[in-house]
Length: 335
Image 1: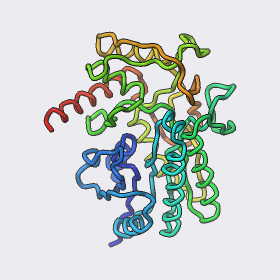
Image 2: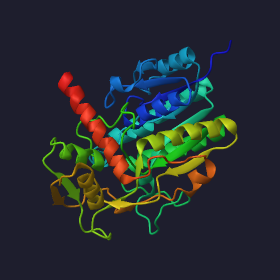
Image 3: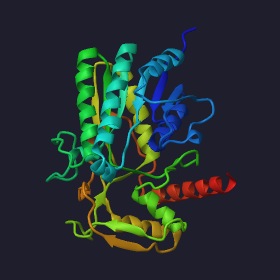
Image 4: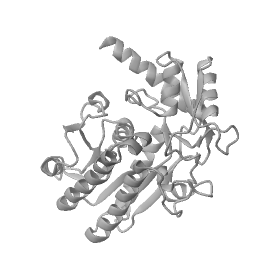
């Protein structure tokens, strides 16, 4: 009997990757995870999922994983994701995000992998004169993180044309929330995601939330972002994979967002409503590399995939993030 193909999730012990693992398993896919646990957590990988601790630049390890697990597709999440850090240490980002993605692609081509889903970013668009942002806009990142992802998108397109695999680039807007069943969430200490920071403050783990930039051309002067629930995003990955397999001649590039933006202060007000308390805001200057507004045009993904977001509500996103933060606090107290 032929072994069913497995989907290799790189960075599958991390925040978004672990939710993709859950979404794949919920739809019956065999899953394999590789993660070097630099920012991921072993507990985020469910029991029964084949796990390999290691680096995606390790060609020998990847060859072994592909053979042992009958890998037929890759969801690639592994990488570094903090914009200000990328400005301070660009070479780290070109190594982790671009160089090692090249190594992963080379290993995938050598093994005959036919489908790759790539975790890209809305920061690829940089600062544009139009909003919402659509996929045909020129890519003009304003920080090394964005450039490291754009370079990988280019490599994917060139390698696919040369070697006959297909791929899907998913450009994320601001990912937030946690698995509604409490199976995974944002666990990284010192994370910079606004909703993560805000719920930590609501639970007394921080004494304030810094608001970076109050002079943007927005309704209240603070930056606007399009927040997408991590479980909706994970579902989009599974549907994209199934679309690639259904039509191996087609590759896809799509935004992942809801098409609606909230300012920083609006998000903090939402956290206040959910927690019935007020978080202290401390106003600060702009961070280098932050665009004033990032809102998606999700028309293409909705026309291409049978994607129906289930958690398109800021209050729900905050509630799930808060529940996960309480889960983490309990986990730490029992450790």
